[in-house]
Length: 303
Image (cartoon, rainbow, N blue to C red; front, side):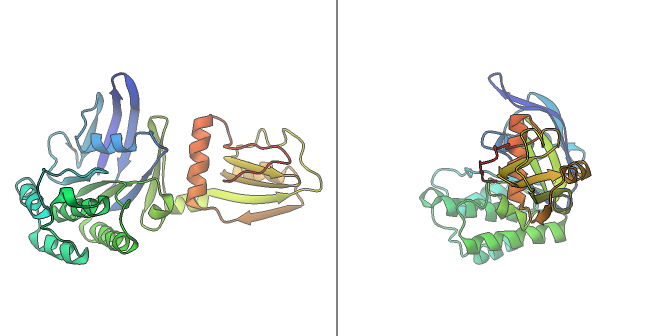
């Protein structure tokens, strides 16, 4: 289990993480979402002890990650390697630090990824550098695997291969995997839960089942275009009004009952994607209001 308590991190006085608390059980794949500059990479670097943090503590299985990193591996968005080293050289380097490094698994992964271990890493493309880091990371047999934009640069076949390996890790080895990404759709079919990092903190962390059950998108139709202010006191995440037709995203029963109280002649449930949910939540957190978009009767916006 990973426990983060009151984590604070700043860069020359610029606060990135403020009193951040987060608790994650092992045996899960967690997607970490947030806008650019929200601090996703910083958080992963603090967990992996690449960055020192100002205050707080980070514990994995009740041991500080500052003390013991032997069961932790971080696949950075800019993978580390020594100049002129190839992947085999990096394997030998990591073997000296990771007592559980699995040579057989390493060889299997080379085949699965059709990867040339002898080519110098500095001559590889961005995607191949990432593959090298992923192969090495998985071969260390970590109990906590941190991945920063790790699907970026991988072709569709390699993405599928990676997803299968991660699912196997979690199911067979009870590993905790945290993946940060801007691509919500990429995470949707692999993660058990998703967390949103905004305003220097984890503002929510829910399983995909909870997200699907708690968030709703509805289209409402009215005899006449609703007057200004009709929806002001309804806790909506998103509102789009086009004359007599209104589309909203909300969570919870309170908003649903209030919407029915506006007397629509049509109330049509729509499917809502994870991307729509997180975009609405991110914009809502930035605006500090109850809805991410409030538009006039003749306006139209994209969720």
